[in-house]
Each structure stands twice: as C-alpha cells, then as structure tokens.
Amino acid sequence: MNFRTITDEAAVTDEIESGSIRIRVARVGAELVSIARQRGEGWQGFLYRDGETSRPASGWANHATVMGYFLHRLWKEQSVYRGEIVRGGNHGFLRHFEFPEPRRLDDGIVYSVAADEVPKTDYPLRVGFDLTYRIVDDSIRVEFAFKNAEPTLDAHVSFGLHPGFSVGSIAEARVIFPPGRYKRLFAPGNFLNGETEIINHPGGAMPFEKSGLPDSYLLGLDGMPDRRFVLESPALGTSVTLDLSEVPFATLWSDADNFICIEPCWGLPDSNPPVPFEQKIGIQTIPPGGILQRGFSILPSFIP
Image 1 (cartoon, rainbow, N blue to C red):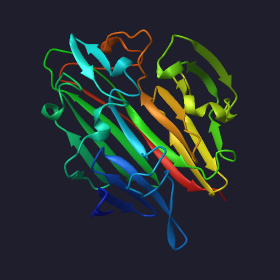
Image 2: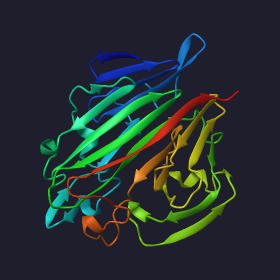
Image 3: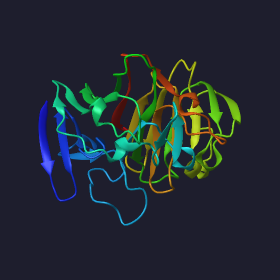
C-alpha cells in the first residue's frame, strides 16, 4: 500500500493506492474526492468531478459528503436533544470539520474527532468519531465508529455517506436494485410527513422515474436479503456496486447534472412536525461507554 499527502491551493488530500485501486481523501470533511481504477496506462475516476478540489462555478460542489452526527435536514436547522439545542445545516458539522493528519493502517487510513473536539452547539454529548477508509481486494471499505464517552447516558446519532458517481449521461445510466421488499418514505420539502409505500421489487431497473431524483427517494431496507445496488454508466463504460448489507436506509438523489448519488444512511431527515432529536425516525442508539460501528463497501469496475 502506497501513502502520500498532496497539498495544493484548494485542499490538502491524502492518497492511498493498492493494486489497481487509488483513493484520495480531503482533510476538510474527510471527504473522498477521488475513487479511481487503472485502465490501460492511466486512471479512470468514478466520482462526480473526480479529483477536482476547487469549487465549481455552479451546481453541486461535493464528491462524497460525510454526514453526521445527524444527516439530511433539521427542522428550521435545529433540534432539541435532552433539553439542549442542536443547530446545523444539511448533514451536520463533519462535512466542514478540519480533520488532523489521519492514522495509517496496513490497508487504509483513519480520520478522527475526539469527544472533546465536537462543537457543543452541533452535538451536546461527549461522543468521539472515527472514519476509516480501507482498500480491500478491489473494493473500498468505509467504516463509521462512534464512541460514547458518557458514563451514564445513551447517545443518539445518525450518519452516512453522500457519494455522487459520475454517469456521463443520466438518461443512459442504469440503477439496478436487488430483489426485495422496500419501504419508501415520503419527505416533501426534505422533511418526513409520515406517508410510506411498500414496494415489492423483483430486482432489476430502479422502479422510479429519474425525473424525481432532485426530490430524493428515501428507502427502508430492513429485512432485505440482498442489499447490493449497482449503478452502470454505458456512456463512461463504468459500473459501481455498493454493498449495503449493514445499512438500514438508502437515499437516491441527483440535481439533474451528470451524476447519481446512492447514499447509505443510518438515519433519516427530520419530521414535519418535528420530534425531539432522540425520537427521530431511524436514529441510532449507543449505550453508555459503548461503540457503534457500521460500514459498507464500494466496488468500482468496468463494463465489458
């Protein structure tokens, strides 16, 4: 495994390379800014704006946003948690956090936030966070770990990753669902309204119109025997398989540019009307002194 740090005017990024896979991670937000695989004599990127760290003139500015200690949106950008006010915009503070130099592993890197470094206005309890990126065989393994340093209190978090994969042409792209029983949750204006729909899907093409992607599709995956989703881009000759075996919810989104997001989520947006933070639908619980660890895998490949 090869490691190096790249410093330019736009960002400090850490790069790891193993076999035919290379990833780059920005220190701000610990965000994947490149997933690439060797193709002939060069590298083929898989993320939207793969490898670009400068901000675009317009459109979505991210590649694979890290979400936590809450994800999606809070009602009026705030919530009440054990009598304390939690404040924040979309997806929580981690996306803007300046992580220190990561710890190196034999097969990856770990970005950490100590419990005492978590801004109290963003999250009032003492809960630390580790985010690990590993290259395992031909896949990228992403692991989240929350460490509850409170000796007597349960802690509650929601989290996930918001990766946008380049497809060249949304019209030609194929989102392939595994067979199973999906629970769609409706969130007009990005807030849950309590409406749901059960979808029994035989497997194959996404059962939704791509024109609805800007409003997001929220899916519950509990009870699904197979949670491997595939995004194929004939225009680019690429394919991405996401193994969401440990993931309870997935979000599909695009703002109609040439990318599609398939987001593993351990949690959901706020409700309308809102409920206390610890009662949010999909919230994850960590016992006193406990650790909550979950993850998923991304397999980048080429269409024959």
